[in-house]
Amino acid sequence: MGADMSGYLVVGPRKITEKSIRKAASALLRKAKAEVKSSSWTCENCGAVMTMDTSVCKSCGYEHEDLSSIGDLLTAKAHVEQLIADWPPDYRDVTSRSSPFSKGQIIVFAGDMSWGDEPSGAGYQTLKRIMASGVSKELGIL
Image (cartoon, rainbow, N blue to C red; front, side, top):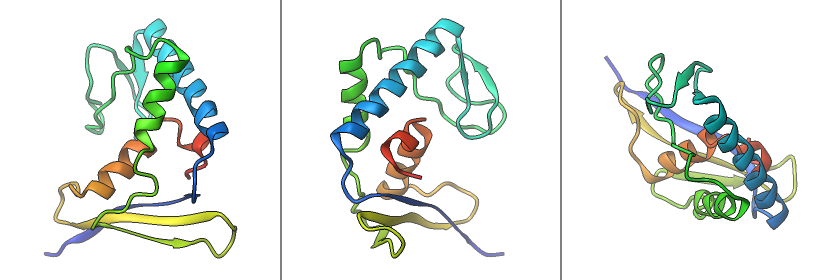
């Protein structure tokens, strides 16, 4: 019996531009309005459709963030800025390197050894939130 390495490996810009933040805020606002209108949400992790009365996916256990408080572009932009406040993350469980393939890009890994549980490190949790936000593509983080 042994441990496994669990983590996120992403590539993203060294510095996120204002244009990318505005683009992500617009996408987040569209997503929030669609969820409120349809009274359901789609799990970012497994694709299952859940009703708004539950915040945890019944298929995979993913915790969904309630976006109903995002009603305008200013609120959406503030949400995105809070989401990326720690980009690139600089915590004990994170390592990053300049990308050899693209100037201005960095490769970031955050994770820890796991015996079946999810890593609790700040870097892992930061990347998890960014990747589950639904706007990582707009921010250039893949």
